[in-house]
Length: 202
Length: 202
DNA sequence: TGCCTTTGTGCGTTATAACGGTCACAGATG
DNA sequence: CATCTGTGACCGTTATAACGCACAAAGGCA
View 1: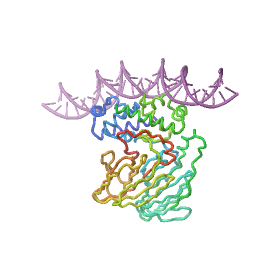
View 2 (view 1 turned 90 degrees about the vertical axis):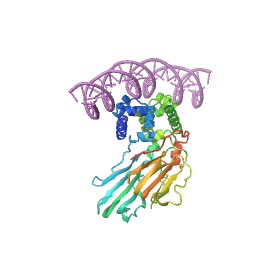
View 3 (view 1 turned 45 degrees about the vertical axis):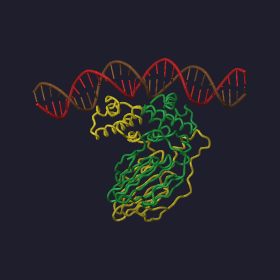
View 4 (view 1 turned 60 degrees about the horizontal axis):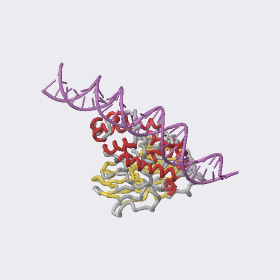
């Protein structure tokens, strides 16, 4: 159950924060006004705290409420794998269903080439080269990517990445069509799937 | 009681979202898997939902949990200037009305501090540190930014940037509420929550 | 070593979250 | 007009959050 998983994640995160601050459950209970028995249950994922209790905890720990629960992941979209397993990928921003995007830091080995199939229809991708040299294949043609310059292209077409002789590191942001938002509007009349804006190439 | 005020605010916000989307309690109950009686109680601030219930609601409404409790965005407004003239700023991705976001590369001089007023309501900001050292002031507290790690926070609150002794270069992405999103959230309650912003991902 | 303190967990009790069902009301229809 | 449907609020019941207390275990100290 996703909800239960979320309680577990947040509980573990809360424990980690408390321990990092060197606080016992008793001390944390004093700070937050939540009983230590309850704090223990929350940390162990055995109970799902109410918003009021979360608020007390956040206030006692002097954390924003949003920060306190940020350990619980947003619902994941049905993303296709972006990069193959041989490529080092780190998440910079996890998928956010509201923004309908996610950002990865990708590292290619020297001279490495990666060809990507088309992602789901309506996907756009941003690339920002951080280090090294990189070429992108768009519409069958390779072009150099300037460092710290943004390159935005349609990710729903085949494209490729080719690293220079010293490797490369770049940010890759996937913008997915916001179909999730459209679903929320299904009760309204005439809601059609949002259409693409005109081609955006740069 | 601060906790009760928070329940009331979030309940009012939730009702506003639901009504803006033209959903009845019954329909929202179907979408979320939370009973309509409970949704009603939550909206009226008569009950403090557990995290598990909040999670169900967020999932049903396809909202990030943090967004659900952070309050929604206001209707769209025009872009405000982001950085003062003394700071080197290069456009990485120009404003895109479809995505409702833009990205800059910002360079601060060694030891330079920049305090930013709140941008338009509903704005979120991403920071990715590329070079040097950087601290961000969020909710009046300075925190170090890890390199190549994403920091997402509410840009509609005052915040600050402070560069290390060797200066710093970072990407700043402004996410503005789009007109579609604004439609969903047109009845944002007045922001009374004392603590906002913070990491949405890390 | 014994004693004391601290720590986290379990238990029983109380308060409240969460539910399904019901109802009053408003609006639409024949 | 009567009837039907949809809506939000209320009510009683069940499950669980939240609590204070007790206790076993660990750690520190003389």
